[in-house]
Length: 484
Image (cartoon, rainbow, N blue to C red; front, top):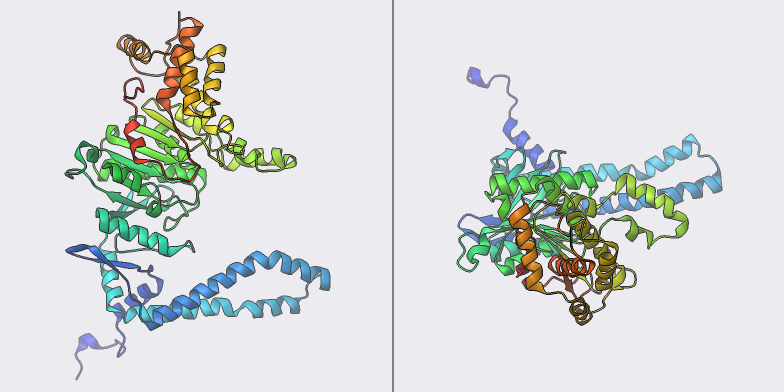
């Protein structure tokens, strides 16, 4: 006789198994495994036959849907021209033709779920996933979990993560921004590392450019220099959710900064932001919001977006483009970085084909960024004559020409440094400075040219070439933005 406790429960039905099966159907895609005690021996996850077959069907259905979505305007236009307004019968026929796609999706997800249900490795992963700590700001370690959210090239990114993990013992984390996006990040801790010295106590936060990812992007540069590094992917890039619109980018870098301070334990003064290309926007957001950050390096970036967009469109679309940029993509880096008073370095690529017209250094948008920074910080120095000489320096096509112009202007570095140090000792270091009152035009020209050499480094390369490691040793001092 059955006990009373088992009455009413259908034979063979286990509620926990049903819940587990549902989680296998809806769970994230597992790509790589790292075992306790063998952190550098990551191995690819091996799906069973059911999972592999279902993954192929899901990919094919996704590609078919994407293809149908993009050709649909042409298809319906063709039908309208050839047959006129569609009838109910025609609409139903089209619906039946594509009805198999959601059915295929559903069946493939169920088959994959059953395959995962029978895979012990995936079930252990689900157990680990439920134990991950979640809080407002981050969702704990993510070294063994990976969400498949897009069709970006997976192999290079997976290999990049594996390399960071194996070579630098990197740890991944998902950071939850205030707008609900999950930002994929990676952290390499060099504090206490014997080969990093004092540089390991400083954290370099990398802000990637467009179509760039931390897996194959900026982190390698500060890592080779010995710094601790925090990399992250833009909303909608690789395994970060959301879309790369300005408001979402702002919230993304905000949660990255808060994670670095509240969870990783770095002081603001020990944080350096390294930004490349359009990543300068998120860097300027962080610098504006957290003015105590220890330094900002803007590499191959611009002052505002519209001038770059203007040179790549027909003049008849100029007003339309201006409206679109102002409304949806107002990436005004120069305006935002003016609110930051800390150490700042602008790296200009002399052969930059993206930030200039025909790689002409005189048209590089970094020039305009530097001019606005100097005008904001030293308004009394940037007179009409000083500004003209500054532009002459910016238009020089080589380092030798720039050095000759500085020599002809009579710039004495020691005297210029002495003037800056003397001003700070009396008036402090908060910007804007009123230095320049009572100076002759020649003295203003000398000082503004000297400051230009402190704020800008020139690198003779195109837009996408990696920045040399030694450029990270040119971070200006917090007092007066002076470099050795």
